[in-house]
Image 1 (cartoon, rainbow, N blue to C red):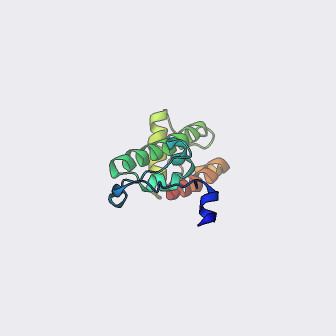
Image 2 (image 1 turned 30 degrees about the horizontal axis):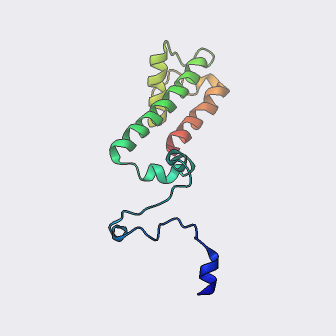
Image 3 (image 1 turned 135 degrees about the horizontal axis):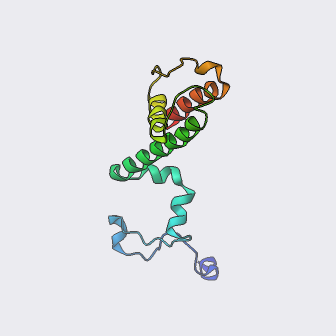
Length: 131
């Protein structure tokens, strides 16, 4: 009893004087950080807690960004490796075709032994599998 008087107020995460509403999930939580920082530090659980209509556009944007980045690389090596891509749009289509399937109709099946394409093809397939 005497020890409790000398300790003073204890810092708690949940307020002890929160009232009756704590049993209805209305906790009085004292925030130690800003709200957006909590979401950034725990990105995995933030993505897990997203509703479907928030998760679907995020996954779509990740796939589109991945396709676009690989389309730029395919377009840059197109002339050296005899792929025959005439525009960035055809490179984007080739990138989607490469990432989503194995066994498509490239003009030269082994890219004339071009080491960039031989390295890039499995790299894009593996990146697509991680997404």
